Image (cartoon, rainbow, N blue to C red; front, side, top):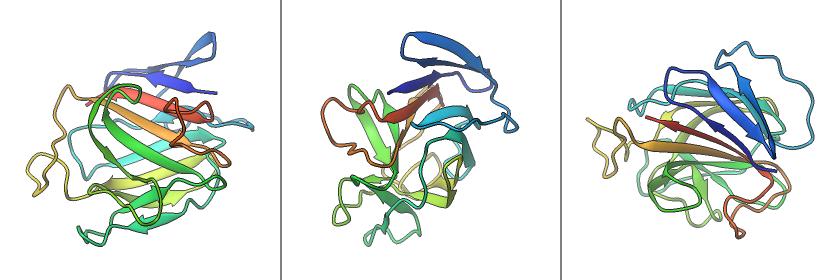
Length: 181
């Protein structure tokens, strides 16, 4: 199941699950009910500040994603590793079903970390906390990639027992949050 939450920074997020639609508050105090597949109920604002904390609330995220540190950048950021059993995520500048400028926080396997990682503070079944994106990203940073006002941003949470690199992308066992930086 794909859960899409579309938002413009600073506004409430409209979510859709299959054919039905609801509105979810962007407050971090949103209540979470038990679920059997990934669901996003709230996301803190994603801005052009690449070192800002991003908090994702919901359920069905799984626990303890496999991570890999990028040996080339050495900024402490990690990528979550695609797995058939553990969860993972990607933050994308662009449309996940189309083209994008960059992706952060996702590795197809433990041998292929990418240039932009995430500073993963915590991850459990109901909350993911990211303490910023890797140093290769953002205005005023030394990075090769930019995060600019107006960029379309998608955060894709891949639930446990789901392989993300399958076609079509993202697969049906993910939750996707879309916003504008």
